[in-house]
Amino acid sequence: MLTCDAYHRPRTLAEALALWADAPEGSRLVSGATDIYPWARDGRAGDVHLPAMIDLSGIGELRGYGFGKGRLHLAAGTVYQDFLTDPVLRQNLPCMPHVAIWFADDQIREVATLAGNLVNASPVADGTPAVVALNGAIELARLEDGEIRRRTVEIEEFIHGPGRTAIRKGEIATQVTLDTCCGYGGAFQKVGQRRSLVISVACCAALVRTDPEGRTFEDVRLALGGVGPGPMRLREAERMLRGERVEPEAILRAAHGAADRVASRSRLDYRREVVVNFVRAALEEALANRPNRAAAHDQSKETMANA
Ligand SMILES: Cc1cc2nc3c(=O)[nH]c(=O)nc-3n(C[C@H](O)[C@H](O)[C@H](O)COP(=O)(O)OP(=O)(O)OC[C@H]3O[C@@H](n4cnc5c(N)ncnc54)[C@H](O)[C@@H]3O)c2cc1C
Image (cartoon, rainbow, N blue to C red; front, side):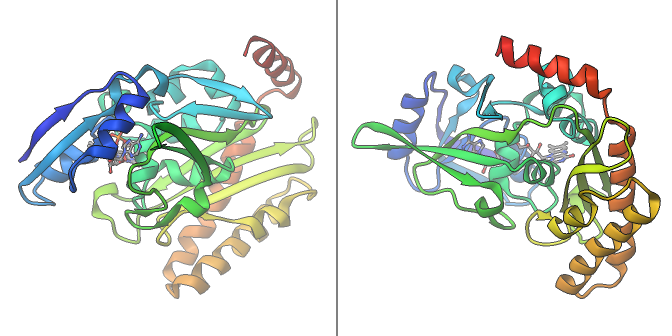
């Protein structure tokens, strides 16, 4: 059972930061609480009593999104259901609706935040590989001499290992910033049982842009989750495909290149086959999901004009 001495629901970021700065040791922040509640309820952490819980879900500044310098700035309260229902997010983050489809169920998606998923830093979190493929970064805010100070950390630097991140005492995640990838095809592949936290659980996010005829790879983004302590960007496989013709042989070569890297790190050969199949399937799915280029270009211009 989860109990606490004080439950706060601040309305502004400044109020939340002040509460968090003064919170007794052992207090916790919550957004959707979909990691925190089961952690206590399922007995994984035994009976948990917290001095204070600070619920961030009522803070208006932590909802919504905006564009800037080719990047999409998602407020930390963005929930997984938004990636399915918001047409602008679907168009600009083409792998995220595929992540969301695989993510939990309708009820959990309505409250589970992307920021909570990143801060929780599970090695099998679905969001992290997709965020890494989108060159994601997280903004962290804290109070210093009564002023709100912010810093931004790349997600690959932010996640240090299972449950370990670069977040510092007194900080609250306020934003996740991602590349806009309008015109790309997106995909997400996932296998295994999330809760088992075993190494056979893995996922792969892919983004692919080709020339208008679909003959050549112009850009490829690939990242794996569940094969190591944190998400793994497959830069070598991406380089192998950029400028290559869109052919099954090229895809297979890149998939084997990705598997070499994973197998040599983990020394577990059986993952090789999983990774080869994963990467190949993700690339093929992303190719199949490419939007019509001309229509995507027009939509993108319209989105930017309205943003
Ligand atoms: C039934 C069920 C199914 C699930 N399925 C999946 C799945 O398919 N894939 C998957 O990846 N996950 C899954 N999850 C896990 C969970 O839903 C996700 O990790 C979710 O994204 C966490 O977000 P949250 O807002 O609920 O986080 P919370 O539980 O509120 O918080 C998680 C952690 O992040 C911290 N935190 C939250 N917000 C902030 C912030 N703004 N700043 C700083 N720290 C913060 C909290 O202190 C806590 O340590 C599932 C959970 C359940 C209960």
